[in-house]
Length: 243
Image (cartoon, rainbow, N blue to C red):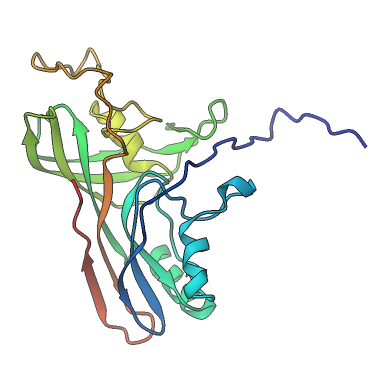
């Protein structure tokens, strides 16, 4: 039977380049792993055999029963929580669903933010016309809230280092919310990276060239706080940003 084309089926044609970065084990016991994921590594292997390499694929070589409780985007680095059994995965998943897990990210945003802190409250939906992008949509989007705090304003590159605390966990939330703020995350290939000049927010000293690209997405998962699924102990782990 010949194959037919369905315009409503979106196919991800992305092929990940080889990732030379290594996964670092930050903590381990018989129930969980805390790891530092390198930028440029998929969380899960894709359907395309060329995308076999991933966090999960690497971990099961040494921890055969390991399962991911959550994911980080391909370009995002930083702390991830891994369950070492299905039972533990279920217990941790309940914490994520109940929003008792606290997460913080460090990011470098293009330009200088006006305010030292703020809240971005914009609902997010899939952009059916531009897979795999997400979009802001007040009619069909799911609630998405990101809190931010300025850590440092830099002269070179002309950027702001911020701490993000996502209240919700939507796909591409921090990347899309940063774009809507008028200050995209440096190195972001989906939502306007280095050199993105918005006429409504451009600064007189903004002379960053589009040719001066960052080698990676400047977004790092810095902190993860949760209750140990077996002991109940509150774990609050910091994974320092490399930038």
